[in-house]
Length: 323
Image (cartoon, rainbow, N blue to C red; front, side, top):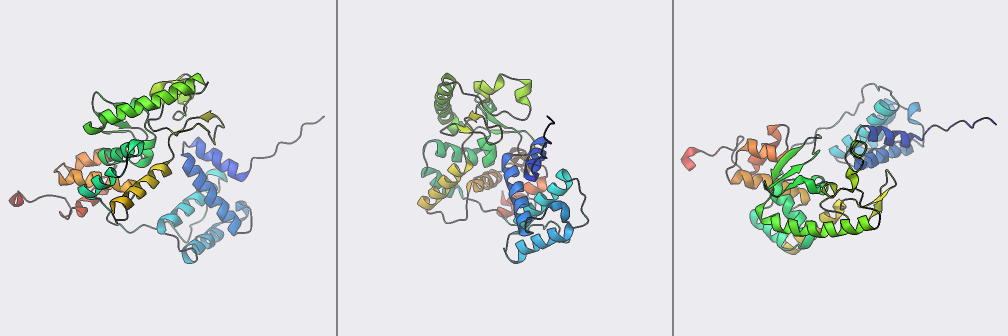
């Protein structure tokens, strides 16, 4: 009996594989696949190989003219489709009429010190601790959620941020006022971890390829997430049941609710704590290069925007006469 010919993988499965090979996040995988699917449906399910630059331009034009999407959303759609053609189909497209749009620079929204404290006072428990760390360390929300137990150094009072934006590591401070609350939190996480181990689980997702290099590491305490989900779940990529980190929406909703209770009417979010961290450090007289390192900005010009928030001029320099 002859072997049945194997079916080639579905297009979106090929996209997922290409994304995983490049160590891109699961969120990126979901986003790219969603935009590629929308592009195909827009053109009545035609295969992308049968289309090209004109069809891409038509799709993007519809997003801009009819859907009224922002420049960043338009760019995300374009990058998703270009990834499909260049990295999966291996087709180099001619110049696209609608190239990536540059967002107009805007000053970030910043909480005052009083507003930040009011918001935090409306929170408690794990959510208060997480929001306090956002404000007290300047980390991004996804960086906070990816923290592992080993990344917290209580002796040196520092936190190591692994694979931040640009896939770079950096170090930021551990606020002294949060050391004891964080220790108490980790005790609770350890209890949940011990229960998982007794029930035959306790394995955690490791960074790329580390599970092959260190087969036992996935069950070690030091590799566990600091802020874990309340329940175990099936990993959408590996189909393995494990305890993942907390979903970002949990803290996002909590911050919005705390802002409402604190009657802070600014257009704020979890990320506003990061902006506030940088601005308040500059207000306290720390130099911009130090703030740049703490934020993990590759270019100091990115950090410079906070000097404009302070209304101190382009360099954020204070006149010696005013001292």
